[in-house]
Amino acid sequence: MTSNKTKVWFVTGGSSGLGRAVVTYALEQGNQVIATMRKPSSISDLVAKYSEDQLLVIKLDVCSASDITTVFAQAIEKFDRIDVVYNNAGYAALGEIEGTADDVARAMFEVNFWGSTNVAREAVRVFRDVNTPSGGRLIQASSGNGIQGRPAVGYYGASKHAVEGISEALSKELHPSWNIKITILVLGGFKTRAAESLVTLPAHPAYTSHDCPTAVVRKFLSHQARDLGADPDKAAREIYKIAFDDSVGLRVPLGLDSLKLVENQLDSIRKDVESSRKWSADLK
Image: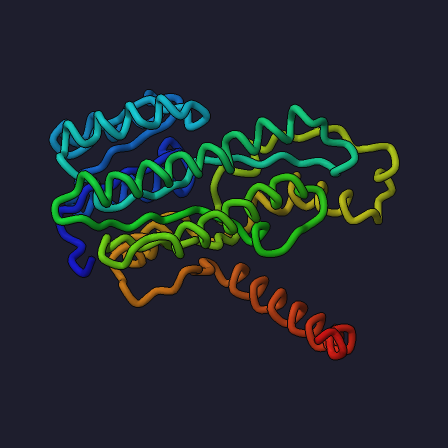
């Protein structure tokens, strides 16, 4: 896609944060938008501002595969096609790996991985089998935690690692003639309500000392983090540009902090690779 005019956007997690920012920006540019979320009343101000011919708001629980199929069908019935899917829905749990119960971790994976993956699968089907001509852009919301595992958010990071892995594999399965492009956004920190929506678990007794890495992260997220981060409205502007730029690669670190984290991780991996060569030299 090269034109950014009058396209149809489908956004998950559109009630707040970067999801709402992208919904708002796409509408301001004159696009048609399907905004999905668990509580449609949360964007009643946008519903009042934009006509039904431009904005369709639908309740969606991404944990339900049947709901996903139904909502995509409603979107197609309304607008005939979908050009861009911003796959944004997700949340994080704060807690040590030892202190996170299986049901808490699995519930987060249901949203962050299975929900995201089922949306991605339906998006690809629509881009290929419904759109005329075929094609579209799938933007997968990942995180710096999907590139580098970090303390106190281990299961969240694991869910984003999984999103990274399946998105890359999916991008390599697509036939070029389908004209479908996948972009993984490696998101840094933004001034959204993400910190407030954290599922915060009690500290595991073994990790309570003030200098414990997880304790440091807990303190940061409960105090300094809310005052830091980039502007989500400016991020929405850049995400909009990315959606129509055919030159972007599979991954786009978004935010100066994300760029730095990815660079540091690459340096760390290169160092590990170089120091490991001796173990493989005589394995022919």
